[in-house]
Length: 253
Image: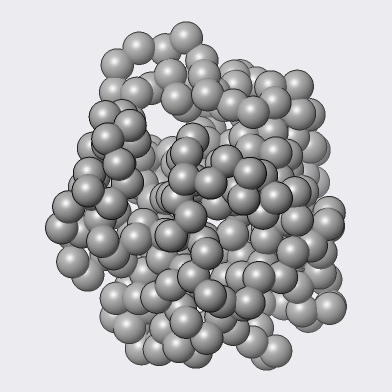
């Protein structure tokens, strides 16, 4: 079985470059991606972007610490619910949201998809509960009253091998990426924050802010191996790479 894959840009953030690449200086403006996966058994979303409260007053929503290091470029119509509606997809028709992890720019739109279950690694959920609203986690983003489906390790979303969660711990203790086998584009690896940039993978250059550097390097090696066998690596926040990515309603794969 295969799936259809679509990409969305849900705003941009300007952040310190050392967040992305250890030792680097200056700032970088990065996209906030989300992906729609259409399968005969249901519709899934991989990451949901920013909370719609950050459209008007991001500092009030994310708090002083996060606002100090994040400049939001996020406008009405860029929130995930609006992005879906713009291609004729009702946000209430999404069956499952697969969050790479629970940082605010990856799960902030979960509440806009109110009929969806939330699929997350159990260890990521445990970590988010432990730190509560700190270190990039905002409880109001992910504790939305939706059903939380916590999985442990690799997980086949639709039971046929076409959409599979891959544990890629390192950026956070429970980060996961997603392998999608598509009809027209072959195999894609949606990295989330397991690999921010093309340079990260090519130079094995880890971020300056990271939970486990050795685990992240091991993930880089796995991604290289998948790339060598023909999988397309979808870097998590690479602005130059993202300029080459067709946006929905054009199919990515």
